[in-house]
Amino acid sequence: MSQDELKQQVALAALKYIKPLLQPDAIIGVGTGSTANFFIDALAELKHDFKGAVASSDATAERLRGHGIEVFDLNEVSQLAVYVDGADEANRKLELIKGGGAALTREKIVASVAKMFVCIADESKAVETLGAFPLPVEVIPMARSSVARAIVALGGNPVYRVGVVTDNGNILLDVHGLSITNAKEMEAKLNNIVGVVTNGLFAQRAADVLLLATLEGVKTLT
Ligand code: 5RP
Image (tube, rainbow, N blue to C red; front, side, top):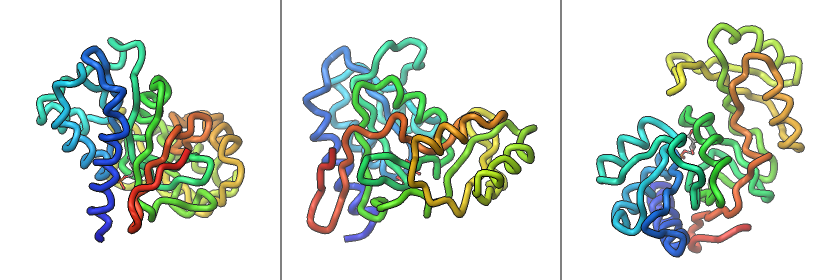
């Protein structure tokens, strides 16, 4: 089974998992990336069972609208029944690295207001220790060099993601060389650097459920 087939399989499992949470007035949060895209395409089938969605990126908003799913501004919404999104890495505590698709800030905001965060991934994303995937950090453009120096002082090797501007108009540093044994602490330290908008560690708000597609089927980890 290819990686895309695993992603599609887990997207379908997510649809089944969240179906009981869908009600006519429910608004759900939807993430960004290729796994999230499979989920959005599957979600279209249930579009009459819920009110609409909040998107974690412009690309996701466009895809949702393309399926006739209404997209709401988060400021119009007080609570999201569930947030479904992919990840670049997930550990056993369901702490994540996200942001490979550059949408980490909006993803973290949407996840923070969701009652439940369902992470969907193929088994290549499951790790013992976070950090082999370079950790994305969104930075205000004028602070690129000062933030990079502060990250080096923390033991990381920041690499500017050339040519990428986030939906918020900022730049990204991908931090190599970290072995993250205390994800909550690292998340807080990085957020404390002046000029950092957010970082791709989802530890303070980890996933509640990880649906992991494997060759033996989809595993549900909590
Ligand atoms: C986007 C993300 C994605 O969830 C992450 O990069 C995983 O992407 P994919 O499902 O394409 O493997 O955090 O910012």
